Structure formats: structure tokens, C-alpha cells
Length: 389
Picture (tube, rainbow, N blue to C red):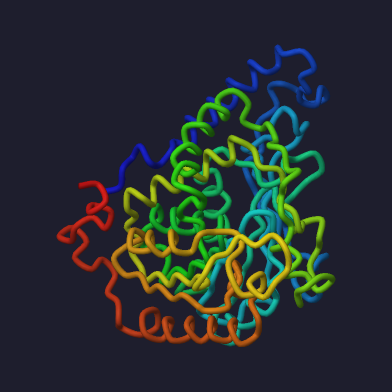
């Protein structure tokens, strides 16, 4: 059984947010709602735009916007509500589909990934989560959330939008999106046929002292000033430069939406991430096959060298690998020599191996009969039990 405490009550969080917003309205300098809107005006239910429209970032692609009218902006962001954006390269033509969740400081731009899944027989959909990429609106705090579960409403809407006409849906996540995908798949059993995690951020990197201090420090800071931006003077932009074609990489994307340097990191956001890490450490029960792929090595180089374009510069892949077994009962772990943090953006021979691993895994466990959903779940020990005893 899932722990109900691990799944925040959305209505309760919304009531708390409204209460905090009311308290904030008494603070000097508070930016209140649009005075022209009557206080008793009925709330508008969340809704999808009327139709798909041409994408402004990927030629030939289309986007569909979901309005999260029940998730208003923070006071410091000004009036308005959050939105999320679904992206597809073409109208559906397969009975299978996948939904891709991007990582921190980015958006969906990997056309070659979508083309790969289309060739594999899946309609591909990417989502730009609220406060990211196509969904980032003027004045918003890029990437900010206070719980990973804050994404569930828009992810539920995306799955409902994709489901008609598709007999099978898969889920893909990279980095922070990999953490989100893992938690979401756990909390939405019997929804996905398979989950692919590309270097998922399921454990904290850094020294033992840093890992021990980060959660309590972030908890304290998040209570006092959740949206305070940490200084970024020491931020290293090397990983971004290994990707973009204007520096050392081969990829072209919008540098205002995926910057070389990180977006500002805020205590409320980092606390949400560490809470997600805690849930993985307790042991998840993802009920479908999981393929997790990372680089074989991490490094912390600060200037260009061969390691910069052949290792993970963002996360500790050894720690990620050590957590893999706590995702569920059927997890395939692959570590690729020469891979970058985003394995799909690695050099051509490496990403070809990445796609080959997905093909084999899909054939064996998703399309094939190598996995039976609900594999004696009630009689199998909790995958996180060993770490709790």
C-alpha cells in the first residue's frame, strides 16, 4: 500500500496557498490581483486551448496549451495563472504513445528523440512543465515548485489528452524530469506500459556532509524565504557549452530557455527535490518495466577537456546507480561509457547505443511477454526494506 502521507492532498495545499496569499496581502508592497476582477466572479476550470497551433521553436511541430486556472501565480509573480504546453511533431498515427518530461533549466527541443520514438512505433509528446520553456510567462520564477506533486495536475491532463486512440502509453524523464517521472509512475499505477529514465536525479550529489546538511538547511530556508535566489556567481556553465553548437557541442536550442548557466536555485524548489529523493530512498513500487540509463562516469571538471564531453558533469552516476533498485521490482540499469548527463545528447556512437538499448528493452519487456504487471506485489518484500533495517 502506498503511504497516504507521501501524497499531498491537492485541495489542502490549495487552501493553505490561499491562506498564505491572504496573509501576504497585508504586507507592504504586496502586488495584489487585478482590481478589475470581481471578488465573487466564478472560478474558471482548468482547460485546454481549442486547437493545436504551429510551434514557434521547432519547425513543423505543434503545441497545445493547458491553462492551470486553479494554480495562481505567486504574489511576486503578479496576476495570472500557470500554464503547461504539450508538444508533438505530427498528428497521431500509432496505437502507442510516449510522454517526455524534461529536466531542470530546459524545455523539449530534442527532435531526434521524437523521431526515434516515432520510428519505434510510438507517437511522441513532450511537455514543457509550468514555469519552463514554452510555458514560462513574463514575471514567473523559472522552474519554481514547492513539491514534485505540484506537476501531477498537468501530467494527468496530458495523459488524458494523449490517451484517446492509444492502447499503450509510456513515460520518459530526464534528470529532474526523471525524478518527477519516477514518482508520478509510482503514484499512478496501471497507467504506463514502461518508464525510461535518462540520468534521473534520484539522489543528491556532493560530499557526505553536503548530502546530510542540504535537507534540513533547505527546510529551514524554505520556511523563512522559499523563493530567495541563491547567489550564482560560482555557477559553472561548462555542461551547457558542451551541448550547444556555438561552443563545443552539436545542438541548437534557445539559450534563453535552456541557459548555459543554471536558472536561479531557490530553497523551496530544492526542498521539493530533496523530499523526492527521500521518497525514492524509502522505496518506490513502479508497476511496469523501468529502463534507467546513465553515463558510466561522472566528473567535476570546470574547463574544457576530453572528460567534459564524455562524462556526466551534473550528477553522481554512482549514487544514481545505487538507488536504481529502489524504483520498483523490474528495473534494467545501463551505464554507457562516453555519455553526457543527457545521454540522448551524447556523441553519435553513444546515443546510437542508447537508442539500441531502448529498442531491446521495449521488445523484451514492453511489447514482449518478459514482464507481467502486478508480479506478486503483495508477497514480495518492499524494494527499500533493506535500507530501513
